[in-house]
Image 1 (cartoon, rainbow over the protein chains, first blue to last red):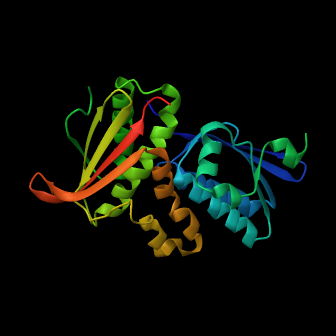
Image 2: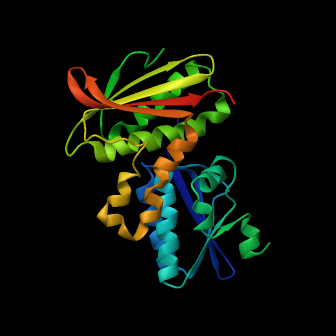
Image 3: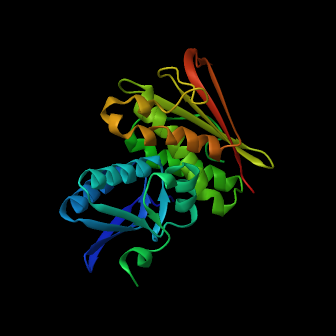
Length: 113
Length: 143
């Protein structure tokens, strides 16, 4: 009944890698999301996370976003979070995380149209 | 209706999907507005994750019951673990040493629970003859 799966895909655009997450990042999928995210941040200097297809995020997912943001900062890389909407955007705002993360309305604002 | 009587689940991550589906089914039976499903899902996850991760040092159980009236859906959660009142405390993860670098997200779960539910009542009292954490979460089912 509840969709508790997460899917990843990635593509490059210019000097950015676009990492797309769809489905849910909850307590059951946060670990695999963190693992994948660490791998992507480690291997790329400019990462745009496309969240426009993400349906659900919980505090377990917020924690992953903060870890990856911190990791990118430590390594002087860019980690831009793009396109959160609906329930996902509400959670980012309700938790106050919107001020801690590099949030962008749309992917094209970051990587260009 | 599912969960109109107490049902127990192992307090482990493997039970989480079942717990979530059972409570969401009960909410659907109680005619919760479908667009509130993710909001309720989040509230359930944040409340249940604290019990699964922090209530017990080893194996334990969570007891769950739901009910509804015209405007509200109620979730009752009981565990026999360490006494923990989420209303007066920050998220226990804030004290998790492995998380020192990321203290900030630690408190988010409790913050979200407080935003999602109309009220949260906590008591530490007897359940089936043993001292237990008893949480009642009140959710507005149509906004």
